[in-house]
Length: 433
Image (cartoon, rainbow, N blue to C red; front, top):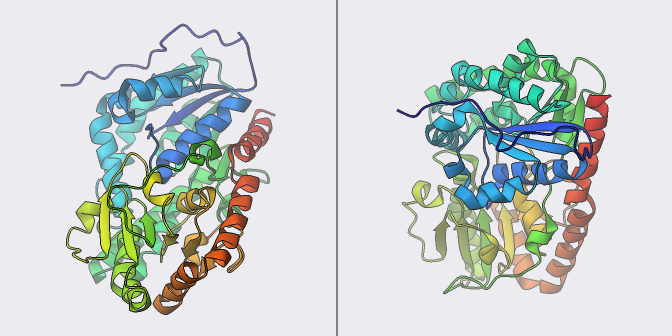
């Protein structure tokens, strides 16, 4: 039986030595390096941004093994004053696996949902988090990946007066409810509806309880603003990328075929990415192949091989989970974002933009990012329109390159780390004041 222990700092903190801004205790239920996939990129880039404007301490609710072992531990400790582990990290193997299942099911089938939000787990952590915050004299507790941290928020606010920032990456209730039209059965639709209502209620009281709730876009901020108890309670903390990570173009994988269509994400049964991939394979690719039989679709990401194991198309390669999507993405002819339900803003768009790869997306896939069809992205929502956009990119390389260059300029201007650092400074100024 694994022994659950209280968090212990690796060295005795000296909270007043070399103070470089507000003192922040960043508490996260997920942490991994290399950070492959949106949730992990969100956490890693948040840490990088906060580390430039604050005296940052990290409290991980996942284990050293799950975060990537000693190399990952060294990596994150270099970005902060100290990294320690919450008591629940001793349960992290089960905890993170449950989180993955919950993310993959997107709450639609309620797989392990009550375990992730289990108040017992949060009770294990909240007292230890408060003690750690007091030990380092934290000005703020910042709950990373806040969409699954509402019970911990309530426990901390009930027992402490320390200000709390709840950091969301989407409107999760919207994420759930948008799956209703795609429910396979009436029973599944009813489960989705119940899960959506439960999440809406959690968001309602959680937004009022947190000192500040962050949103990744104006679209999400409008929703959370409708729930807020007072002005200034909602702040933008965008999804961004570290442009330095995309400067070197890796060699393509062995046997790579062009023109290459790139589709990446986190997959699971009945998930938005599963729906998007099957829509591409079954409805869009036949139209593309009518004019470009040489076009090849590459599908990359966690769970893709499992959930698409029945796919046997000769022009489709399912690469599965990889340490990095860049060997495929950087050598692709076009990046695809054919999502029909989702919430938040998509790292896959930002990453493709940073790599200078033209993007074809649905309207919902590009939600929250100020793009214009035909200017910095191509947008279509039906199979024929989506196929035509792909073919236009393949047949008009000069136009595609111009559109991709404008997206790269947008990413550099508004979705780089310095933008996030400025937003972090504004949030901390507001909450500390």
